[in-house]
Image (tube, rainbow, N blue to C red):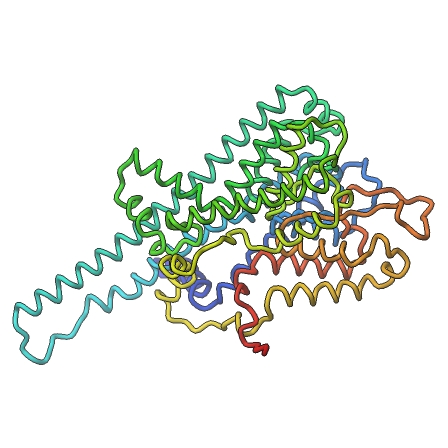
Length: 510
C-alpha cells in the first residue's frame, strides 16, 4: 500500500523534473501560452455570443481572439460587443495569466521549486563524504568547514530573498489591480456620460471596470466597447487612471516595483528587502533594476512620451472636434503612453498624419525597457537574467536560439512578405485598404503585443460592395484565414521575443 501511495508522488516529481531540467525554457514558455490559447476557446464555444453582431464569426476568429488575449496583443478579428458578459469574464482571466507581471511571478515560484529540487538531489551526496586519505591538521578542516557553512548560509539567504521578492511581486499585482478596480468603478458610477455609454451597449459596470483594469495593467488593450476608448475621449479622469495603470504594468514597472519594495522596507525593516535594493542584479529578476538604471529608464520613458506628444500636437492638434485644450492634452498623453505595448486608443489612426503613424510604428517596435544608458553605467550595471541563474543551477546546454534565428527585424520583414502573398488578391482588388503601411502597422503591432490597427473602411473600396459595413474590429478581421494564421504566429513570436533579443548573431554583414 505504501508503494502504491508513493507512486503518484514519484510520477509527479518525475514530471516536474522533466519540465524543469529536460525542456528548454523557450519551448516551455511557448507551450504555456499555446496551451492557454487552446483552453481559451472553450468559453467561446460553450457560451453563446450576443445576437447583435452583424459579422459571421468562425472558429479561427475565436482562436485568434483567445491568442490575442493570452499574448496580451489585443488584435481584434471580432467586435468586442459580440461577446457576452461571461465570455468577457473569461477573457479577463486569460489576460491576467498572460500578463508579464503575473508570468514573471510564476517564473520566480517555479525557479524556487527548481532550486529546492536541486538541493534535495544534492543533499545525500553532501552528507556522505569519504574521509581524506592524508592526515589533515584540525585547523585546516575547521577553516574549510566554516567556509562551506558560510557559503551555504549565503545561498540560503539568496533563496530567501527570492522567496520574499516573489510575494512582493504578488502583492504589487493584487494591490494595483484592487485600487484600479475601485477607482475605475467609482468613476463609472459617478459620471453620467460613462454610465450612458455602458448602458446603451448593455455592459455591466463591474465587468467593464475589472476587464478594463486587467487589460490595461497587463498591457493588452482590449476594451469591452466596439470603439475602444474613443467613446471616452472626453472623460479625462478615466484616461488618467488608465495611463497610470499602463505605466505601472509595463514601461515603468521596474521603477514602480523598486519604489514599492523601498516603501515596504521602510516599514518592515526586513534584511531581505534591503539586500534586494542594494543588490538587484543578484536576485536574477529581469524586472528589478538598480537605482541608477531605474532612473535612466524613467527618464527615457518620459522622453519618448514627450517626443510623441510634440509630434502629435505639431500635426494633429485638432484630431477630434468637441474637445477643450485640457482634454486634447490628456488624449495626446493617452495615445503616447499606449503606443508602447498597450494599444488602447481614442482616435482613428487613419486620421493621423503619416509622421505620427510612423513614429507609433517605431515606438511599438522598441522593447518595453529600452533606455538610454551610458557605456560606463551599462558596464557597471550588468544584469543577471533569471535564465542565467537557471544555467548556474543546472548545467544544461540548451540550443543557442540567438545563433539559430534571424534578427527580430528580419522576422518581421519575412512575415510582412508572407502576409502580402496570402492577401495578394485583396491587394489587387482593394489597394487603398490593403496598402503596405496598413500591413506593416498590423504586423509590428502584433509583434509588439500592442493592438494598434489602421482598420478597414468601405469608403476606400475601388469596387464598392453593396452590403459593406464598416467593422469595429481591426484590419486583420478582413484578411484571409492564411493571413490571420500568420498573424497568430507573429503574436506568439512577440510574446516570447526575449529569446530572440540578440538574434542573427550567426550572420556577418560586411
